[in-house]
Image (cartoon, rainbow, N blue to C red):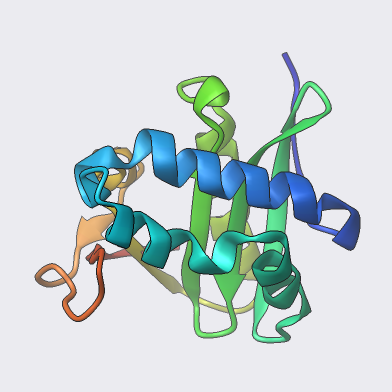
Length: 155
């Protein structure tokens, strides 16, 4: 089993969309409760068109993690020092792909000059981030269909 994290390219857009939608739909039911409105709101920008727009955004950097040559995770950082995406395809869960992606995203933020990183964790991912040294940084966010939990970590 080999894991490779690399910058995303336009050729990855369809696979990235597939990973994002499958991860949200199948792994994050603790967050969306299989509510069609919540799922629609969360996945609205995860279409190939939405992913293409993310890739073109100059304020973010997108990455993919390949598991044995197949895109199995999608991650992103912002120019504000935040991890904005970290999703794994259900079949690759608990195989080290998410950990490899998180390590690469943290390293990218260090290269960008940040001493601290922030993110908003899903209920599904909170324990994953806590195990990686992230701490809670306030109450659950409000105002969206699905609201996460602010977290931070010194890099």
